[in-house]
Image (tube, rainbow, N blue to C red; front, side, top):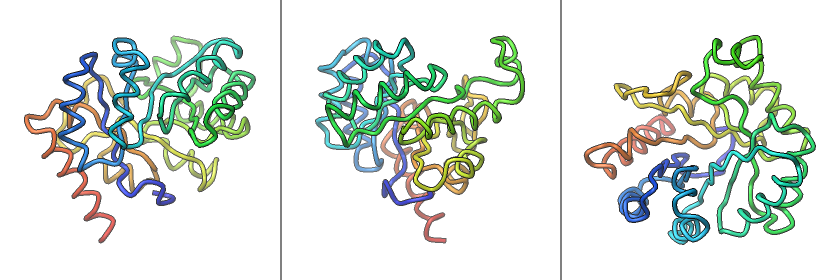
Length: 239
């Protein structure tokens, strides 16, 4: 990692609509991870009360909301989500500078400590997917462009795939928070992720937060899976 923001960089993705299942997972993995990531499936099913319930465990919570709308609407959403006890939330950088600045100001007016980061290019995208939506050139170019715009707008960091970590770090500096999904231990199913790395590779590249979902949550023993990834990262740090 570029800076020791989180002693343990693993944020486990609690991607389930079921609150009871989410609570079971959180209790199992909490001793072995640095934070929790909740996504649209959970937030849509459980609403603000569910977010508060996850935040009540005391671990940093990343609300993967991916807001993208006109500035006024996103500002309103940012203001509300910042009230829920989360540590980090995100918006789409492709919403533009006005939207990003509005969201940052709105969240800070409620909770100055909450971190706002920008989604660059989804980790499920490959070159052909960008071409289909009119964005020509490799994903890395668009990632760096959007991360740089987010920094210029005062955001705290960006979400990018492991393949772009070093590029974003070079473009945006040591203080820019890099959050990385698409992290898969060796031997894991890639599922719908395209641009991936192992946890150790992503940490070595300079990621601050490693979002790990199914390799932990779909494991027969989620606590063991989380513990093994944390141990692997710790061994790498001590080496």
